[in-house]
Amino acid sequence: MPDIWSDLRKQIELALVKLDIDTCLLEEGRPGFGDWALPCFMLTKQFKAQPQAIAANLAEKIHIKGVTTKALGPYLNFFVDWPSVGQKMLGCINERYGRLPKISKIAVIDFSSPNPAHPFHMGTTRSTIMGEALSRILESQGWSVKRFCYINDMGRQAAALMLGYQMNFSGLGPDKKPDVWLGDIYFKINQSIEEDPTLEEKLEEMLRAYETGDKDIRSLGKRIFGWCLNGFRENWRLLGIKFDKIMWESEFISESREIVESIKRAGLTSMSDGALVLKLEDHGLPNTILLRTGGTGLYLTRDIACTMWKFKNYKPDLNVWVVAEDQKLHFQQQLKTLELLGQTDIAAKSVHLAYSMVLLEGRKMSARKGWMVLWDELLDEGTKRAAEEVEKRWPELSPAEKQRRARSIALAAIVYFMLKYAPEKIVNFSWDAALAFEGDTGPYLQYTYARAASILRKAKVKRVGKFDSKLLKDPKEIALLKLLAQYPTTLSKSARDLRPHYLAGYLFNLADAFNQFYQALPVIRADKPLRSARLKLVEATKTVLKNGLELLAIAAPEKM
Image 1: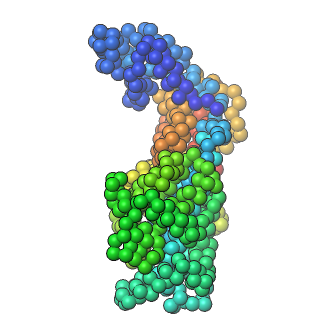
Image 2: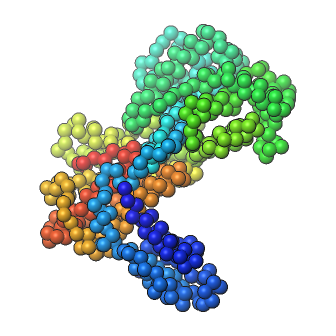
Image 3: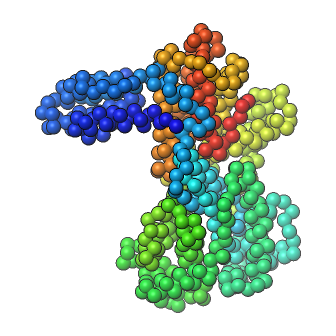
């Protein structure tokens, strides 16, 4: 599948290399300037001339098919002849456009990993959505991706849930969505612990019993966490996610003990007030506790054991954790420990894709105290709001279709809002912003796709046949051609940098350019030769929007 944008750039770079020029090209975008520009300031010593003269001289020497060179001041500009180049490109755009053949590379993407003590909250939702989008983007570039979910059932929160169930709900089962029901129990036990600090001792006993393999407590945990997992699976199904492997932290207890012994043998530990400490200060990181005074472990060694399991069983070329930024130190300590244990290959191939917090209209959330917005509440509220908009826009629809459309719009709003920001950026979620049918939103992308589909239906065209792209000369048509050419490059960069927001931003720019084109220029009413060319442009835009939305796990509705 051709990548016109990258191919043209490579041809320009090759022409420059032949002239012994290695100055970097700049991607332009300003009106009146080329698609790329070469700054000639750095070439004055080499060519013993002023930048303006160098640019003018090079413009006469460089000749590339489909590209016009022009000196504009001290810059050599490269203008792509899009009407000419567009013929081949538009003819190649189909459902495989931008995708690469299979390559012999494996990626393990570890994401979602919800805390079994409570339902999905906004932070978990961000991890889940980012991880799935990244998985799909890597798959589009030929990677074999293993979706991995590692759930912490060994920590304080999990023990608190078991204690709360044992004290107040023993023998009962969920009477609503199980993870939501268990979340209520978790919030209540935390309130009880705050009111009665002596319960902390019972919490420690529960944690110790679970880790040491007490049969009754293990059976209790298996039952409770199994319920929670059933609730999580409902969420994953709605988001189109199916994991290749779901594993629990408790599965690595015995292996973690072996890790502790390996760390001891490496001379990396010391004792402090009865606790076993991992010494990392000499390696630029804070020391951390491996075993508490009572002998119970912390999650570092169990996480190391899990990481080694992944490399043993999947042999990945890339291992990614999509986990919140507040775990940055944990992953630094884990990777440094792996290095010190001789596992340098594992450390080199592992990446913590850290994401920042999610606020709801400026408010930070706390899972422990119950100040948080749950996924189920978020989706219900979004569906309710979207249903009101659907009723206003399409009152003639059946009740079932209205509900289906509202759910699709709500999901698109949530998913896109989470993905349009760089991972390191705080997401301040707002329903008014997320659900808008205009602007940088999921519903806007869906609406644009449906508009393109509607144009083709009205034109009674299933697939555009003959067309002449040389008729596409308007600046708005050129803008669309250029963006369509950049889609494969955008996917490549998104996969290379592990940044789904590149693709999200691209799709918004494409949708925006399409709507400007559609509003300014007639398509169906255009003269026949131009009509075919513009319909081909509509068809190509529709295809790329669908391809991109699918990679972000957003539905592309034919009608809206």
